Length: 384
Image 1 (cartoon, rainbow, N blue to C red):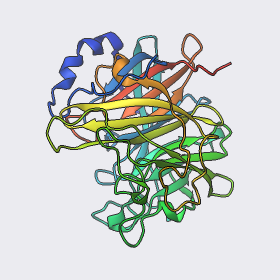
Image 2: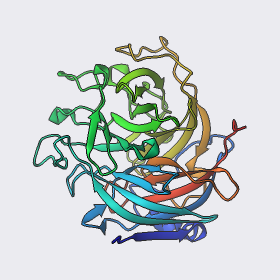
Image 3: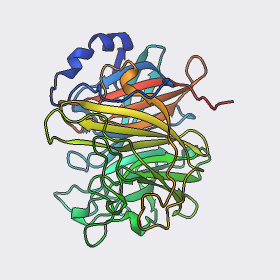
């Protein structure tokens, strides 16, 4: 017997209550962000879940990935709980998208499992501790793919894994050495900035995995006024389980400095999503203390740019990164607030027949943040 939990709120009601959502001064209200020209997203509705909502013995939060199965009409959302509160898991949901309303209903929760069949352990227990970040459903109900950022401190590598819909383990993909934590510091992924975004081509043959930040040897992280080094986007062939090509993507500079001098400020790539066989949406998320979160969406063509898979270091001027075309600045979309958005997926067609794009924010299990779902109508300028 299902025990659904729901959240539903109209767009207008959320806009009226937007000021209340900005109560945390240090977090800000997400107004940072620069104009990107004409917006190609139109807000349809928002919904938020209660903080640390209990559902079937688990704590709902940390939702870092989202995907939709058009055949069953069900959604899945991945929690990045590292088995600290409950075992690593994903949720199944139903999301109804109206013309100015979004309705979210939790249906079930599924624990991800190791090859041994056991749930993944917490850091306190030790062993194969995972940090789930990206998730995509495979076609025809075959299962799902998900990423883990790994942990250099625990000598646990970034991972791309295939699981069944019941959470059981199928296989792990071969991760190129350049994307793994090295024995000695100075090269490889930065801590908590490795495998973050995950996209799947429509034919289900290629999975793209995005690094959240540049490798240490590829350049610095973005700062205010400087874009920093490129992030590597790597394509994995699902038939062989191996990486087959790679592209370089340069995130923007941090748009606004923190209000607290020397305070935390960063920008990176939390999610990617295929538009078609070659074009990809790339979400950039910037945060500065006292200013808030900036979310900007870009489009790239994966046929563009240099193949960097065989390059140990990405030298400035020695390669051509992906060309970026702006899609939307979330600050201008009418949201009640912007938060730590990490999940992005296509939904069913809107009432007008256009594609819908749904995003979800990761609240980090922090009472000053929110689990926010937002749905948009998407205008594809290159659609026939």
